Image (cartoon, rainbow, N blue to C red; front, side, top):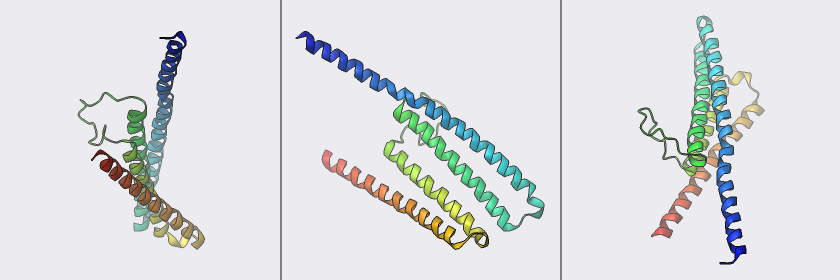
Length: 179
C-alpha cells in the first residue's frame, strides 16, 4: 500500500473522530436548557403566589386565567425537558438510566422525527393557551391583536399538520423501499 494512501486514511480517521467528538459541544447547551427549566420553575412559583394572593377578590375568569398561565408554564417546562433528554440522547450520548424506576415510558424511543412532532404539538398547545387567555379577557384586547394571534396560531397548526404529513409520507416511502 502506498505511503500517501496510508497517510490519507490516517488523516481521514482523525477527521472523522474529531467530527464525532464535536457532538459534545452540544452538552453545554443542554445544561443551559436545564437552567432555563429552573427559570421556568421560579416563574411558575411567582405566578402561583400571585394567584394565591388574589383568592379573596378572585373572579371565575381570574381563576381560569391564572390556571391557564400555570398550565402554559408547565407545558413550556415539559417541552424543555423533552428537548433536553431526547436531544442529549439522540445527539450527544446515551443516558444510562434504564434501570431507574422513574424513567418515562417515552424515554429512549423518541427519535428526531418524533421530537419534531412533540415540539410542534407543544408549540400549538402553548399558542392555543395564549389565544384562550386572550379570549377569556377579550374586552381588554384590540381586534387587530386578536386577529394577529389567530393567524399565528393557525400558522402553527398548519405547520404541524404539514410536518406530520411529511413524516407520514417519509415513513411510507421507507416502508415501500424496504418491501
